[in-house]
Length: 123
Image 1 (cartoon, rainbow, N blue to C red):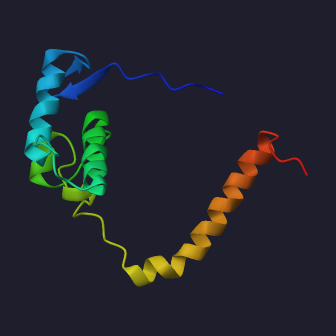
Image 2: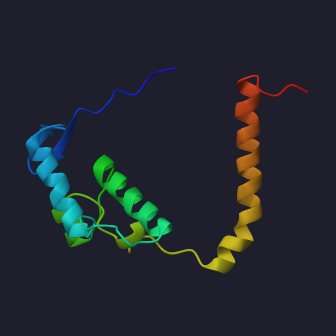
């Protein structure tokens, strides 16, 4: 089994900068501000705070695959509100409900396979 090497640099502008550097911190703060994530969360519901934190983590990890939206290209990260990109078609509630049993069966099979591989099932 091979381990993934931890990333130590991030591409900002035309070059690579270390993750802990002032340039990276400034870029991260600029992306948070552009996405509207730099505000205070006092008085928000717990779900809104969780979503806010999830978006901040997504901004920090910045595993952005690229996007045709000009603001995403300019900020080098996903700027979609509520982490729902406009370039990904939304799934309707009816379609989600129709596919949910199949998804759950696949999930249970995957969990059972992992448990069997690790010897966690004792029957």
